[in-house]
Image (cartoon, rainbow, N blue to C red; front, side, top):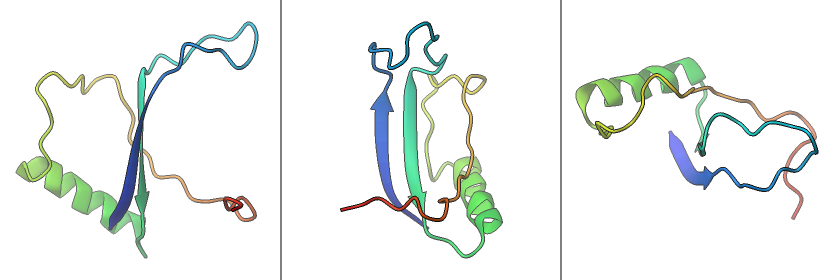
Length: 79
C-alpha cells in the first residue's frame, strides 16, 4: 500500500539558466510498497471512484499526471 507522502510547491528559483519552469505548480510524491503496481493502481482508482479518497471540486483534473516510477538500481538514498 501507500506508505508515505510528501507534497511540494514549485520554487521560483531556476536551477538552470534559460529554462522554463514546469507548467505544474505542485508535486505530490507517494511511496508505495506493493508486489504488483497494477493492483495498487486499480485499488487507488477504486478508492477515488468510491469517494473513499475525496477530491476537491476545485482540483483541475485536466492538468495533472499520475504515474508510477520504480527506483533505479544503485540510486538508493545515502544516509
